[in-house]
Length: 325
Ligand code: GDP
Image (tube, rainbow, N blue to C red):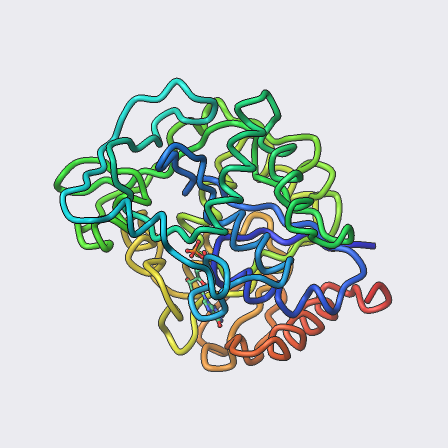
């Protein structure tokens, strides 16, 4: 049997780094709400963090980009005076997420950019996003035991609402350093997006929601028609991204408050409670939460690959998958 992970771009890739040694096969359904068209290419940050992790190329300090990449093209594009602006795009999957001009606001390495070219060429020549991601996995020689899937083949874009107006999540988080206060979050295009056959098949298996941001990593996924319903039928464990009352990194707490969830493990539970069977929390959080599912308290700080391998074994045991590992 294989296991399916639901992933954003930091916490769950850290877990996958150990899980890939522990399981026979795994599928990863990735958030694409952060995707942008930038410098002419379709950039898919969470998909790429997962691909680089499974290919053994991830930069383990940042959990994005390729280890020891060079930045020649990025440096040329960010010399003083280079500008980047939102544009309307006719390109496939470019709707509501395209940036033009002669600069770029994300730090994109040269090898990383090559992967974006592979993806964009595939999509421009008519491949679905699922097919394009598979081409990226092949290009990186990702082991055939691992399947990486975008959450949908349709364009879903995460927007945060700020006093300066709505802005694409990547613009808010990367270009604006996450500084404008967030009043709400929504997912443009979600009403038209459907689950792919590949994702529906992956959700027939036991599911692990990694320690990802419930609002902007899992939120876009759960907004895709059919996904939440499929999860209700599956056996699902989720790992909380909170340790000692705080998130380990990133803006999850602020964004949870913005959408009316408590910024805590309890808020994580509330985001998933209709489909959750097992909640895995850090030992520092045990005892503080009242939930109607199995709770496993353990050490969830993922500093080394061995931490992630151990946590995978514990999650598997809680899901009663021990004989499949
Ligand atoms: P994003 O796409 O970069 O936002 O990545 P994710 O949504 O996958 O991951 C962000 C979440 O990972 C944050 O809310 C962090 O609290 C969580 N996280 C990062 N490192 C760890 C860790 O070592 N342990 C746990 N439990 N959570 C972590």
